[in-house]
Amino acid sequence: MSNPEADAERQILGRIQEMISQEKDLRDRLAENTIDQPTEHERLAQLETELDQCWDLLRQRRARAAAGQDPAEAQVRPASQVEDYLS
Image (cartoon, rainbow, N blue to C red; front, side, top):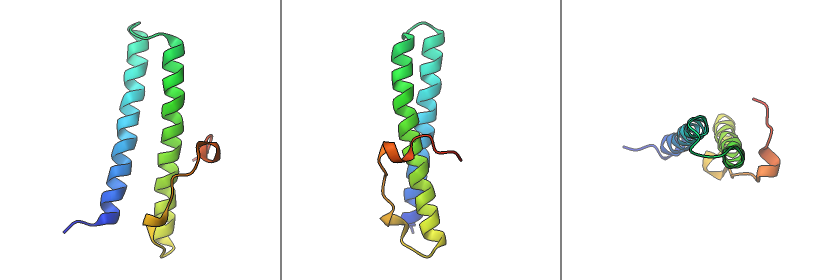
C-alpha cells in the first residue's frame, strides 16, 4: 500500500535531484563552450530559486508532520520569501 506523504516527499526529492543534475549539465556545457556564460548564469539563478523553494517545501512538510499537522497543507512559498535561506 502506498503512503501518500512518503510519495510526496519522494517526488520533491526527485525534483531536487533533477535540478542538481541540470546544474551540473549547465556547468559542463559552459566548460565545453556549448552555451555562453550569461545563459548559464540566468538558468543557474532560476534553478537556485526553484531549489530554495523545493527545500523550503520539504522542510515545511517535515515540520508539520513532526508537529502532528497535515504535511499536505504545506505550500510553495514565493521566491522572494525563500531566496537566500541558510540551512
